[in-house]
Amino acid sequence: MYDRKVVRRRRAALAVFLALSIAILTAYFGESGGGFFHALQRGAQEAFAPIETGASRALKPVRDLFGWAGDTVDAKKQNKDLKREVERLQSALAKAQTAERDATQLKGLVGLTRADGFPQGTRPIAARVIARSPTVWYSSIHIDKGESDGIRVNQPVIAAGSDPDHGETGGLVGKVTSVTGGTAEVTLITDASIGVGAQVMPSGATGVVRPAVGNPRDLLMEFVEGGRVTENTTVATSGFKISKGESLFPRGIPIGKVSKADLEEVDIYQRVHIQPYADLKSIDIVQVLTRRPPNSQTAGVVLP
Amino acid sequence: MILSPGSLLRVGLLLLVAVVLQLSFLSQLGILGGHIDVVVLVVAAVSYYGGSIAGCATGFAAGFLLDLLSGATMGVSSLVLTAVGYGVGRFREVRDPSHGLLPLAVGAAATGGFMVAFAAVSFMLDVGATVSPLVIRDAIVTTLLNVLLALPVFTGTRKLLRPVLKVDPFDVRRRRQPPRETGPLGLRGLEV
Image 1 (tube, rainbow over the protein chains, first blue to last red):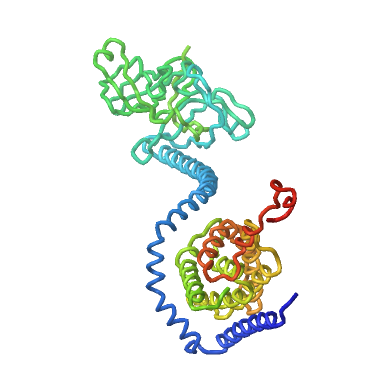
Image 2: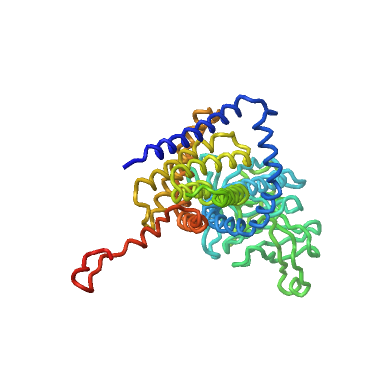
């Protein structure tokens, strides 16, 4: 049962309020920025600003609490995203560091081959280390250049030092002991089977450099004779023939510096300790000296 | 609802508090991309207890106040909230509003209706910008949040308006006693 009066009143109320809303909307759109409704809006906002400011300040702790809860939820997602980003950046960093390390080693090799006293005309070929012996007893590496690149057995191999900018440009690391079409094996001077005829500069004392197995940062120069040896002096290949056969290493390739020259040890064992210039623990790039320098002296250094 | 200075004062204060709270607190409280819209809930609650005429008047006043203080285009919120208020009021008049959980459904419908109608009016007024599909997600989240808040808002509004209501739906429910199952045989099955 409907009361017509109530229905009419209800519909009238709806129509009035809707019409009022549309009228306000139309007027608001039609007037300029300085019109009645715009001015009313500005006035109301100005009047209520202190109330809104007060309410906003009073409720800030609650808002912060909710914000904290929301941030915690967001943080989980951000954490996942950031982990992914860190992985990507770590990968990029590793690439950049590898490139930097390669550049440093190449710079060191260039500095080494251009240094005074280094044998000229050796036609060095750069190669990348592709494999490394896992034991300390057989100290060798494999490089990515082989016979097709002009690499031959017994050619000397050099590498950069750990800090070319501070004098450690590098030096001798070993010799080529086997070669295939595209790869070669280099036996390092830390291998027990190898020995190098060496000379201490500038005293001129000579001897044979042999490894101290297990410690790539320590070489031993044995059979020292012909001069006084002091610490921090440079040791280079002598090119002298000290046994049968042909010298593998031309004269003047730096090997390292004298790290310990104990008088007693020198007198009794004719032995000093040498720290190699080349960073034998972490070689990435080497150069194989593929040509014997003209007028180079020959000296056998292969140990029995 | 009995039209009196007391009822106008109560509803006016309620709207003022709701609008200020909305602008200075709830609108800044982003929860999962949405926010609570307490003004719609208050309009729905007043309409639910006061009927369609009170509903459309409250909707108009709330929308006017909201547009006035928020700096939005004046008339849009009043137009939409008038319709929402009238709709909820009519629902209360033609249906039995005494169920305790009905505010949840009414709150959801009112919020959803408000969002859709507001979007429609905004489109008609040419918003002049690309609209992201995320507004749909925000609307859904806001509706769900309002559902959570519907019961306390409806209960508070009812307590505030109770002295000026012609009929309190909960009183009607209380008056409906279950039929007697014990006592004299002649009274059993009757609502005594």
